[in-house]
Structures are given as C-alpha cells and as structure tokens.
Length: 252
Image 1: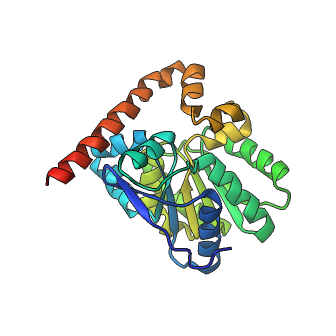
Image 2: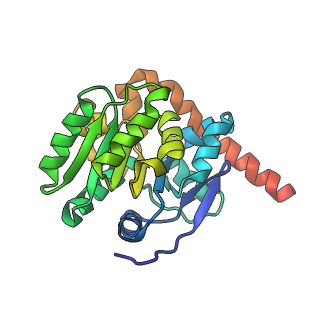
C-alpha cells in the first residue's frame, strides 16, 4: 500500500480526473479505508458526464465535491493528450470496483451494494462472493426508491456498518445521492458505479477483453445496445468543447 499517496489532477470542462494508475488508485482507497474519517467519494469522469454537467449545475456541483474522479473512458485519455496532459490509461469504474472488492476480501472491509432493479444487487453479490472468497457483504438494496426515501436508505446503510458503498443508480442520480447522503451512511468510501451490477450479475455482457484492450468497449456496447448509439455523439462534442476551452484559455 502507498501511504499518503499524492496525486495530480487534470480538468475536463471543469471536472477533475486523477492522474493515477489502477494499482495506485486501489492503494489510495485502501489508505482511506484504514485512516479516513470523512467519506471518501469516487466518481467516474467520462465524456458523457462532462457534457451533461455543463447543462446541469446540480450535477456539476456534486461532482466537484467528490474526493476523486477516475479517468473512465478513452475519450478522457484522448482529451488529456490533446491538452498536453499525462493521463495515459483508463481506470474504468467496473474494473476499479472489482479491484476494491479483491482488496476488501483480503482486508475484511464490508461492502454494500445499492442500485439496479430488484434482485440484481443480490445476484451481483453472489457473483462477487464466488469470485472473491471471504468478501464481506454488509447488505444490498435495489435502486427503485423515491427521493423522500433516501434518508431511510442512508440509515439502512449506516446500520449495516458497511465500510464501502457501491452506488449503481445511474447518472446523475447516483452522484447526487452520494453528494447528499454519503456522510450520513457512515461508510468510509462511496463510489458511483453506473450499470456495473448488471454486468457483474450476468444481466448484461461486457465487451470481450480484446475490445477492452483496444479501448473500443464503447463501440461494442453501442453495437449490442443500439439505443446507446446517440450517446456516441457526446465524444466528438466533448473533444470539441475541450479544444475550444483550451484555445479560449490561450487567447485569454
């Protein structure tokens, strides 16, 4: 473990992403689990969420308050290069979640799964317990609850004594929940994980490893889920906005 790991960040449309590798990120999380007092919150920074936050002040405020944002997406790697930055690899949300579970199984940190349709979190729990023997699951709860029930959900998590909460409510709901209720859960680490429970449970199929290595996992998802195709337009829009922001800054 890397004690007191220092890290740099780079900005993309006002949102920060850390310049860390996967092992360094896991070490940072482990350090916070050991010594942290306030909730350490983790968001995934990708082109889609950067563009969305430009039009959603509440989302941007929430994301700006997260402890770290991981560079989740090849678009962030490309944008970093265009800006002369140092991010050279993706740290995807689902892979970081799995690495944290692997570490937690060894260190006996308790995990809570919040989100997805009824039954999916439980199915993901079973898969994780099988993959990482010894992993302590503090509890699960589906994501089908109303805004006025959020305080009660935070109390359920607190009573579970979870060290880590993976929140898969979809964006922007998961980021807003963590921002508002993270501290109230009593957990040391909270992470937004999108649709990871569906993938881990087997409800959705992840791109084959070769697609992941080639950084075209986004294309595989679009081919498998045509409804996602329109979301691909966010990548060129994001890169265009990043370059415009850079040029404007130079002129300024």
